Image: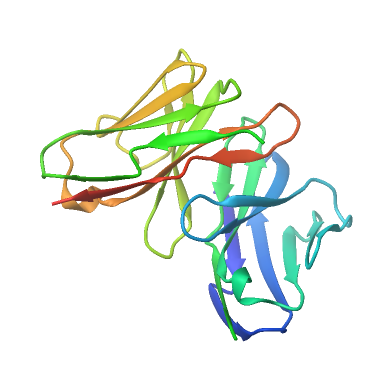
Length: 110
Length: 116
């Protein structure tokens, strides 16, 4: 059975802290792994990863995939209150479906 | 970027009635759209994959007679919750994949359904 598990489920940090969110998976016919940020309504796209070991970076956010150990991490440095959100990891397989992980709820307090 | 519009954003209905939610791709053609359900503070659960011109593919445990999906054109998919009950109250989000190769998924704004 395909699984996408994120950890931790929730996290509370202070502004300026660095956080690392994890996404581990077991899925057949892996195609890509994507990270999304969801604040109030629709998730917004952060990164798409297809190859192991290549870091994707956007401002204070970065992400990397390990296809051997079957996980990805999302790093956020110098966190701000605006980073408070649910972070979703999604897998795609051949066949077009997207499967989402359990999500990590991040709260950044001033 | 691609835009997906979902309507209505919020709907309240009586138990036993049916509710239709529309999902439109505004500036691109989407042969495939996805419908998700989300409970409070939980992740998105894939309900079904909607294919233009053919029957939707439902995930295990999702009742196809309960959640009717129609994808009649390349820009419109609809989800009808039939004979809604309070346990159907949830946040429903549709999405469509962007241009081939990008892998990005574009989401509608979501629809909050409350069944009284």
